[in-house]
Amino acid sequence: MEKKRILTGDRPTGRLHIGHYFGSLKKRVEMQESDKYDSYILIADVQALTDNFNNPEKVRKNVREVAMDYLSVGIDPKKTTIYIQSMIPEVAELTVFYSNLVTIARLQRNPTVKTEIAQKRDLFGESVTYGFLGYPVSQAADITAFEGELVPVGEDQLPLIEQAREIVRKFNNIYGKVLIEPQAVLSSGKRIKGLDGNEKMGKSLGNAIYLSDSEEEITKKVMSALTDPNRIKKDDLGNPDICMVAYYHNLFSTKEEVKTVCEECKGGKRGCVACKKQLAKNIIEELRPIREKRAYYEQHPEEVDKILMEGTKKAQKVAKDTIKRVKKAMKLDYET
Ligand code: TRP
Ligand code: SF4
Image (tube, rainbow, N blue to C red):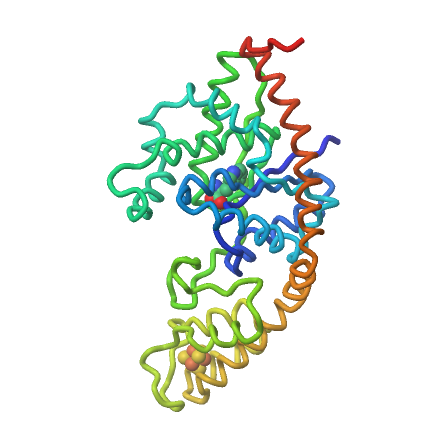
């Protein structure tokens, strides 16, 4: 049976946190272990520049950080091809070709783009760049350059995949059936809230625990997590449903521990400080193998670079093959 190609990726704008871990990384590791799939992961540095064009240093630095995060959670370069987007010029070429197949109005209606533009008022003001508005087109190029059949994404990315499918259908209608129409796979991973109770964990919100955080950093962050605000003394009856510490106990502690936490909290028999310390200990233990693996790569940056270059070389071959067929279909095949 032919393996299905899976394509996923991240913008390298910061190190990855436990939100990424539960939301997508765990799932990627799981899929990489199945012999039904051939996994590609792109580090989308060109896409990262669409909303960080004024900060190239940040993007550059985070390409390696994100690569180390991948390796530390168990993405295995022998099984998964990890590559750098900007080193695949064919993706930029495809983006130009596809830009004729999508209208400005359609991009402006894309819900993901709309939401992001609203969030990035600081950067764009009232008028968004051509590059940012068009990033769904380059994402369609990312996927189709590698004949990505399955794209595991979170709910927020679904409109981008829908847009890619439209572009593919239009291309195939006009130029002949060259491209493969990708399918979104909703990653069943959980979306986890921030330490402050915010719906989203994120760097800009300062409410994240990173895979690379030290034991001290984890403890400090857990100690500052939002608890039931009505609880002042230990014997006040608490409500774990509105406490982020209880929420994270659910993710990192055993079932019995969670049961005890909730019962003691509700009965006013549990101090918040002790409760947080116990949680911090559990998070530290769970993340230990990841942290240790990451520390190894931090000390061996040349190995990380080598993995990236080998993955990228392999990816370049695939993209070259696609662009050849695309150009032939578009009557742009001058090379003999
Ligand atoms: N848009 C994704 C993000 O927000 C990154 C990305 C770029 C991507 N190209 C992709 C994801 C292709 C899946 C497939 O981080
Ligand atoms: Fe939260 Fe634990 Fe304090 Fe209850 S005892 S409010 S669960 S930190």
